[in-house]
Image 1 (tube, rainbow, N blue to C red):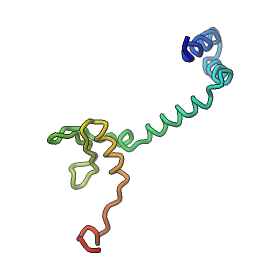
Image 2: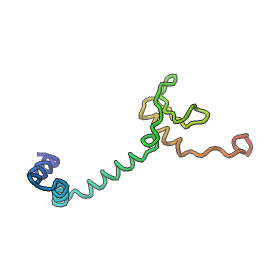
Image 3: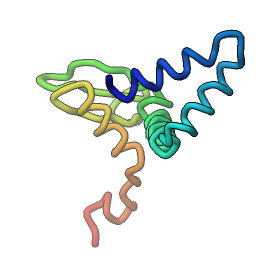
Image 4: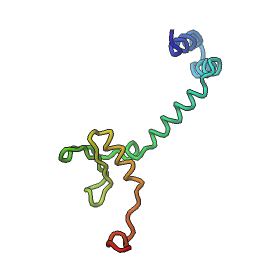
Length: 110
């Protein structure tokens, strides 16, 4: 029996007529998996705060790559490109945090 089945069985046996959240909390504490649960929740929270999740860019095919675009066009918006939708979203996230070049850099001056 795997760990998940044991936890499932333990929780199931305790929720009959009781408080589900208390039963889950007790099983997690007794099974000593609280740190795993905390890590999982932190990973989920981090993923849910990604720019592509919050901003929901439009996803389309542009030539031979996927394009994730937030905004009217490439000139005024933020975009990411990749060989897969996931790659395009990762590129979008990276570009979301990129700063605009300074006016000197934009004009080719140093």
